Image (cartoon, rainbow, N blue to C red):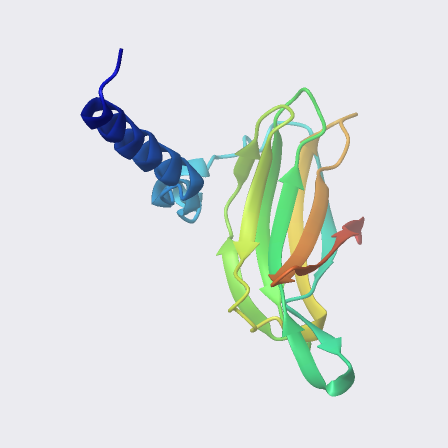
Length: 173
């Protein structure tokens, strides 16, 4: 039979384990930005690839109540390969509401393996894109493959309220 002293020690350790499970430490390695250089690949010019361009609308901010009040959003941009072959994204550029270039994520080919998804995260505090941000992707695919799928999920939470919606890219060239 467990004594009071031992049961108190047991409860102390159990409570510590329970509290640590309720408040997990953030894994910073999972939140690091993507190293686009490590994904870099050369495309063989002799490969018969089809080249294209896609547009994706994203919203770092949306209007709330009036045109004078905005609400900031976190944006998750997904670049999805829906094929069983590798596809290539050759550039990703982010423009703001006014059409000004905010940043270039990469300007060299990267590969997306079969059925792989790679994400770009635009933090809630990053308001550079404004209420009408845009991403332009250049890509290359093997003949008879589907073009990559580009999606964005915008989300914000405050207290017990949340807001989320998504957009889907479209081919423009």
